Image (tube, rainbow, N blue to C red):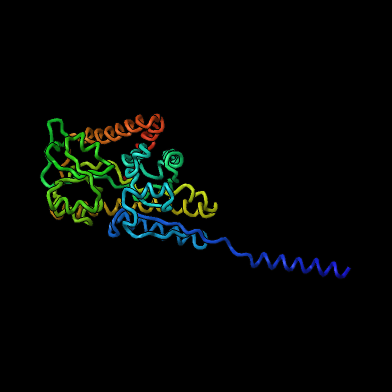
Length: 337
């Protein structure tokens, strides 16, 4: 009887010891790349978000940031989809050929909080998961519209729209259709090549967000701005879907909650910074030129983008239902812009 008691007690002690000495679940390490130079505010914001996630997820999830240009700008979304890297902070327009409906974010006049509430972001996430093996985690650094900046004073047609015939406009995937609708000759190039192109006269105009022109030093050449602002910055945090599913529920919640908080804080910060930059540009002599037909100008911007979306979807044999729902959701106007 004593032997049985002893063996039972010993087994209980061993079991308790095993429980207290069992190794904790290992911290999951993810990798992240980013498309813009380190000095740009969008890169700083992305890295700040990483720091927030790492602080909140200590012992559970950690993100390692790869050096700038370790993967080229326009190759990053594909690398995330394939799992070559786990995450990136990048404009949704950079991979809109794969997910044409991404243009809803680029052309939005809404906010992350609104489109989370009205279901628009859930549709975007579903499209990412279904069509590109990605989890769409959130929309950061929103709230900043785009302007067209020119070397020479802009001309306006009798209908009140800018006349860009003969203008050599730097293009990128966000706004090419809009420029061509206004008669511009477009030249596609990444942002880190624009200064040299302006210096050499390859281009003499470019659009850019209301924040960052001074950081790039493009204002040395571009001394005129066409108003009003159009579209909106569309930096998204996207993640390889398999990597997302491999995270524990706790880690997923930490990442998602931190991203949502950063959506709101980064939006407020960027809007304030953009207002300050506009004051600085004006004080330094930049001329602002309001388009006489502002509403028509914005209408061309939106319609040209959605025309391109519809064309791409038709070529891919896909319907327009999601596009139409997203246009409604992402055009629910935010009051803080």
